[in-house]
Length: 292
Image (cartoon, rainbow, N blue to C red; front, side, top):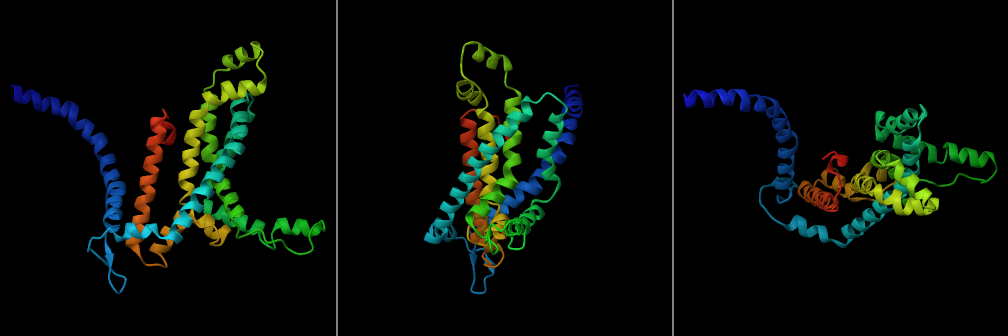
């Protein structure tokens, strides 16, 4: 009797759960766990004299990452990512606040303006910026038409241009979590602050900013981490003059034909990402806002 009961409970409880979760688990294993394991194994493999990968395990790929030239690119990547994150906060916060505080039908339109860039591939949009900033682009045409300059200005292939492209690609990832945090803000607290005689600046720094700090932290992570790997922005707008870590990884897998070294760089980038997410979690961040 107990055996029949256990079978019935299995069919009633466990089997439906397995049928529901099983396919998702299988997809996660095949598309995430297996590729990550493959990259991890590849990172400790070696190359023979013909640049073929051999399963002769070594940690030399990780020690090579301490090369002085690579360290310069790490520092440059962090600088670009930090500047991009700060600019996204300065630009995105007022825009997110304005959207969250708008009560009319314009709110949906403004929100859609943030979402629309996701409808087009970012690579195509970056090529648009390249045409826009080129010597024969609109900016130079306008400057020459207004006789501000006599010859085209070289605006491409600079670190500032790369940062511009990064901000353009990643600012929606800053605005969306900021909007969510500001939307949850209790307006009665702002009214109480005003009634107590606080100036608008004091209300912002002492009430609004602390209560929306979760949106700033999550938005910063969602901008900073991808910025380290957006190699196509640096390639197209920076012309190789402002490489990020993603450029190093891309070159090892493509022109360098050194997959183990590229895999080691990828593992390090994954570890950095996990550390930043863990720090965010320790600070009390909401993991749902990161999509985790």
